[in-house]
Image (cartoon, rainbow, N blue to C red):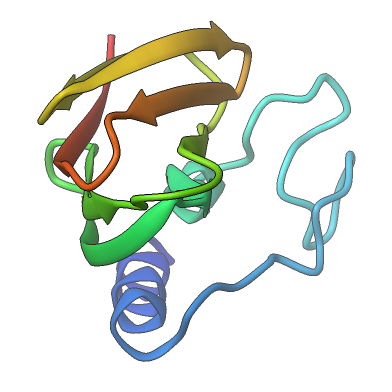
Length: 128
């Protein structure tokens, strides 16, 4: 199952613009987490960071499971909203932002980044 989840997540990242697990429940069967809320065996492989909203034009977005690193690059909007929102799996994450951007706030499962208008931004999220 570990290889199946790795292959499925890799394929979804290449050929889709998003996905959602339909069995996020607590307990047995196909549930993602057990009764206590801990991931069931190999199900942690189905939870990856992603950008819920990007205030600009995405250049690239990728997740590398080997080192659990998510990277997003984009050109910030020149006008209007400049707040990019990241969704993060359970646990502690280190977020860095380059390109005239700052991390405004981190909360459990979330991070927000504001960039200067028109700047090229690179955001990295790693466990830790």
